Amino acid sequence: MSKAIQAIRGMNDCLPGETNKWQMVEQVMRRVAGNYGYAEIRMPVVESTNLFKRGIGEVTDIVEKEMYTFEDRNGDSLTLRPEGTASCVRAGNQHGLLYNQEQRLWYMGPMFRHERPQKGRYRQFHQFGIESYGIASSDIDAEVIMLSARLWKELGINEFVTLELNSLGSNQARADYRDALVVFLTEHESKLDDDSKRRMHSNPLRVLDSKNKDVQALLIDAPKLSEYLDEESVEHFAGLTKRLDAAGIKYTINERLVRGLDYYNRTVFEWVTDSLGAQGTVCAGGRYDGLVEQLGGKGTPAVGFALGIERLVLMLTELEKLENIRATTDVYVVMSGEQAEITGVALAEQWRDDVAEIRIQTHCGGGKFNKQMKRADKSGAKIAVILGDSEIENQQATIKYLRENKEQQSVPFAQMAAVLTELI
Ligand code: ATP
Ligand code: MG
Image 1 (cartoon, protein in one colour):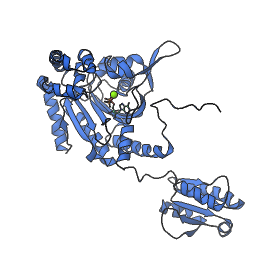
Image 2 (cartoon, helix red, strand yellow):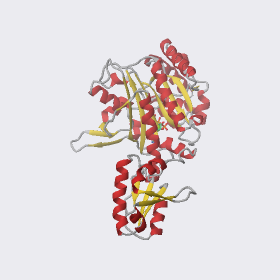
Image 3 (cartoon, rainbow, N blue to C red):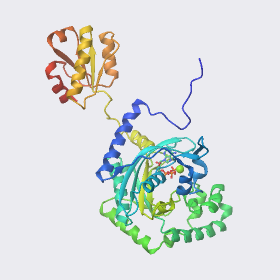
Image 4 (tube, helix red, strand yellow):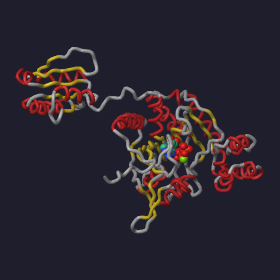
């Protein structure tokens, strides 16, 4: 026997027992985005490598070490998208959707990053994202955050996530702060780990993000970003927190929150949980007023977030919020005898015509009654509809309840659609 081919490490199959959970979660996300008037946008999975280099920043973790980049047959450098925002801006610019307009968009789909696979961290993973263009005021930052908060509420996990907020200020404020931080870090360089030493030169704000406890202890005395914020950004942030307070959305201000992508300014936020171990950020976003222009469009303010669907599904599973998801089948039709087999399939077609929502599996492949009933049970269906010689003769089917302790009943064919509608 030849060796079976396996999936690529960190790129997972989503099997039937899981896909129904995903569908439920996706449905909630689609509906909530719709509740706020957001429209879906779908971008390609492959883009020019330059889009991400220019958009995300050359010295970010993503661009430096996580991208799947390859040469097309004609020599162009292409990359499997590591995130959606740069693609969304590219699409918006290309189709003239952004400048002097307001756009509220959402997307969902696979992203690719060459990271070390572990729980909550994969090489192909999925994001649901929100992007809003053309509004500079903090009301839209608040809206985007409220939309994310509504997702947790709808999924029953709002007690298990907390919102961390920060403001990065204007580009100028951040540049001034960066200089002050580099001075501080240089003074204490001997106490930094290798990662932080490297970042100190390439992307000093990211040192604030270090998971190293000694580095964190050192940073207590570091200059604070809040001391460098420009007045407009301070006002913007106050506008946001006032709105969140009014809507009853709790948050903590985390002065060390800087995010790993270069394009953010002013508001940044993360929803974090302790139900997932090390990979605790479920959703992250912020304002990126400079990105549209940086990618060749005309200046357009923007704000958005991306949510990691794997982490969300893991969290929902661990918190047992996905226990009552409907199986894929409602009704299983058991047929014994040649005439029953033919009539049963025709009847199932009729019921599917009559009741669009119903999900019916008809038994295929024949076999004994008991074997068919085992299959019915395994299918997850709530009821089995049984057809044998006597049922055909009397023009009625027997309904057997598979999940409830209820007497079986006989129902005339003509009333079946109505009865099934009641039962499902
Ligand atoms: P992290 O700090 O965990 O690496 P990040 O800052 O790189 O996250 P973003 O680029 O902001 O993440 O992506 C938004 C969300 O997408 C994350 O909060 C997370 O839920 C999810 N995500 C990011 N990378 C992965 C991955 N490799 N596998 C699974 N989910 C991921
Ligand atoms: Mg990352």
